[in-house]
Amino acid sequence: MPSYPNPPQEETEEKTRTQLTGQTQIPLPLIEEVRANVQTLAQLKERLAGIGPDGVTNFLHTLLVASLLLDASDAHIEPEKDGVQLRLRIDGLLHDLIKLSLPFYKTLLSRIKLTAQIKLNVPDKPQDGRFSFLLEETAVEVRVATLPAEYGEAVVLRVLNPKNLIAVSELGLRPEILQVLREELKKPNGMIVATGPTGCGKTTTLYAFLKEMQKPEIKVITIEDPIEYHLEGVSQTQVHPEKGYDFATGLQAIVRQDPDVILVGEIRDKATAQIAIQAALTGHLVFSTLHTNDAPGTVSRLASLGAKPVNIGSALNVIIGQRLVRKVCSRCTTFTQATTAEIAQIKKGLQGIKAPELSSPTTVKLARIHGCNECNETGYKGRIGLFEVMLVNGDTEEFILQKPAVSALRKFAIAKGMTSVYQDGLLKIIRGLTTLEEVVRTTGKEKS
Image (tube, rainbow, N blue to C red; front, top):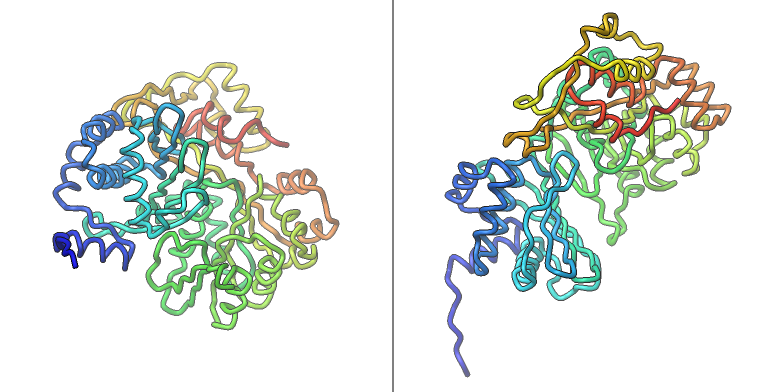
């Protein structure tokens, strides 16, 4: 019987750890080297381009560490006709890094699949996996999604940066709205729903609320798909639809655990909507997210899922519609006098809203972006939330019973004092946090 050489002990141990725990070990010297030498996208491009064909593990580790250091949320690996494009998403926008050769891409793909514990020999079906790595003492989760495409499997690595676990005061809420929401968090029951498109920061907002409420005397349970960040003192569960454990069945079980606060990662179907609403009506404070275009659209979305208007109005406490805009770079941004056209546009958008800064238009200065190494030549660095907060009080509850159209409910909410995400953006513009171009890009034209 032929004998085969044993693999090196270190390699065997690392492979075993990866298979058992889904964790990849990144050497500390590499972390320190990347931290010292990669502060910009240009530096990352140069470093990745210099890694040879045998350095797949080094390439992946460098990419992961640099993604954190550059505040990138995702890495995209996209096979094309003439090569494989690697891109990073920073502050919501994608940036090209380098083109990979097909042989290198195939080896890298296998390495990613092995680490994420997904099947190496299934190229024709989408697969999802995850793994973690330690950056010094901090555990960082990475979600992996593969998709069969025309020229090979496309891969997205989503890096869940623990520093995204921020406090409520860091979300970008105006002081008056922050005070209102803190009062809502003191209520013992009802629903607080965050809504908006994918990637607008809904989960970050809800996690900030949970951090605000963390107390030994309050029991908090979450059901998520998947668990994105780990919170100390909170019981977190993850759905497994293939095992019959989805949001609806999980939520039914959670209610029997006598929680004070429940976080439902997303309301997707009729059963989940009905159970969440019943939980809110029977003494629980429920947090959840919905995919709608704005805050008023939440009511019609819940109705389309089979919830009765009388229960929707009674259960809802507050609806938060949100977007994320890029903040101007503090290093290279300059401020100049606003033009007549800019003042007119801002005044039109803020009609009916008090903005002391506009009392003397000639003194209003707006941010002008330029670009530098600090912001990767974009003029922007970091993001901040734009919010519209719709309180569901007695008058609003009665209006919901009339089954109004979304546009009618929106006008009603604005008449009651709700500031739209566009208007919130305009207020942040005149306070020097972002630009008119960025707010328009993110929100579109003002809705009325």
